[in-house]
Length: 151
Ligand SMILES: [Zn+2]
Image (cartoon, rainbow, N blue to C red; front, side):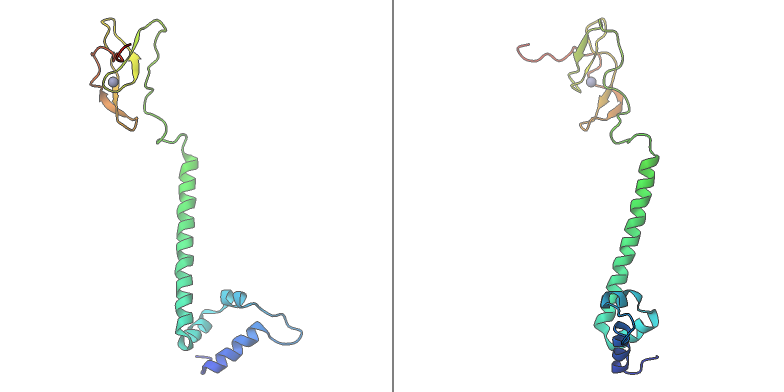
């Protein structure tokens, strides 16, 4: 390795920070950023604690790079979507109907739907507790509408 002793390496790094009269100085932050790999290897020989800090920095930077890539990918996918599938229900709770058609509250799912001429709830899909269509016939179809007590 180019620097045989700890003191030789230290002297050289001091010169990196302050090369002398008329030459620009460097901050330790800049030096840490531009430190060549071979010099970092030398440093690791003489200062294992600094090598551990540098390895930690490399891991953190890799994590940031990976997180930035994941965010960019998620952003790209989100932008490409027309609508969010989480928020757009698969179907409207109340299908279109004439204004004169009687409506009633389903005793099973609690939503208001058109009723058939027999006065029972017409066909509709059931709803999960979180408000998504179950995709199959609601248990309330064919039952009389819910009547609030005292209504
Ligand atoms: Zn229902």
